Length: 445
Image (cartoon, rainbow, N blue to C red):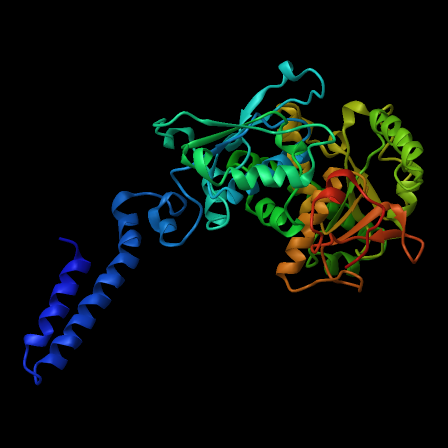
């Protein structure tokens, strides 16, 4: 007999008890009920020390409502560039959330092939991002599951994604709504086939994507590499500051020791394949604010006055696709440019597959004191989204003023002062369209 049934029986017998003793028994019952509720709340916490599990693996997460843990969504291998994969992953998570299901941990792609899909090298999600931290940070919103959680008691329900112009956003949403009912909902696993998630119609607002991206933390071994690269950048900054102080006077040396070392990160899209692509893009779209030459980027970045000089400028660029290695030359006085080779971190990058290299560069840019990118680059857009989310969490909905911190700029767009346009993501946008494919409509709020 359950505890609740026992309580009901006790209440039923109250009418047979004399009036003087009834209030006392009622109080006792209330105390008992309170203790039962308290035990239900704290018992999972007590289990942590006895089981030896970490916080992220503990059952404390079961205390709060969330998506179902016995129903799952499975998606195809996620492909293309790092940030296309992050968007695809988030879209798969939000689709699973809509269906009130957990998303089975998908395979990402370590290599970058756009046409030769059979050459893609799959890599498990938890080799790039921390699985447990993701579920902890996104708890109650979305949930990742491992394949070991599937019991296989029912055949998977195959959900075929439509394609072509006739497959509209409304038709896709209607299909998802139907999948919340009947045969589909009765299946343990809904297996989505057809297009991979980046190409699925988008039904979710920017703020939902931002929340999922904020839950993504790098696997510990990759985080270690990020810290190494940033440390190298700051060492270069200290050296530049020291040399500048020596060239002036001793007082400058003493005063500079107590200042924190800051850096600018520039996502420099001047690789040969990008320049061919963006020139064609400009012709098709009749826009003139997509491509930027090395000289134009240097000129725009030199007009940024957020940071005290000398300052290190880290160039996030695909070195292997450059036509020459002169990207660090031609910068203005007080701006010391470094790419991977000059910084001495090529060994960190060379031993990693494409996806990990990009993940390291993304974090180096996202954590910079100032970031400058191209508003038609998915990489740059997601870096700015990450920085905007952090500003919002600090209560700052605009970066238009001076000294707001975490400033971002678009070097391909001219700002009101003639320099690069200050840039924050529009968090009220109802879809990720502009971030996925680029825009010249950016502002500082």
